[in-house]
Image: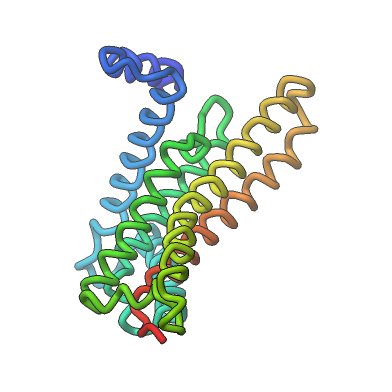
Length: 230
């Protein structure tokens, strides 16, 4: 197995001409590692998809995909199925990115604010593109409030509220993962054996919860843009 430091050194040498910081290089390197892992996992899970006797990997991934699909339908309704690829991709990417930080010597990409901001911006842009596509110019009614004479004030309040969404998505995921990573590093530095194990178990729980919260909020925001303004 390639040592993570050799892996990082290779990526840093490639990104050095772009004057990217060391932390940024690490985040980019591990992001590519996560994407490569998910690509290989998808290939392994679908290699026997036409077979009458699917293998264990396909059965395992079908359980995960079905669970995410059911959650999308329950939250957004049947029309939410068209957003399943986006929601599932974000959920799996964030989950694997969170979990990779539990491996000694590895760094979770979601502990870098650039990675979490990129995911949040995708949700933000998708929400408003879908809103305008579904409602046309009438989507602006979502920002006007229920009373006509208050519309100018409500517009600015609603705009601020919508802008705060990607900020909250970014900082929530980044803060939880970066904070856990720092605490885990401190415990490993002080007592490198049994004491950090409870923190790693907590990190496992946090990884799943943060992935679920991000996915749930993304579905709620997109669903909100599809609803009729009142």
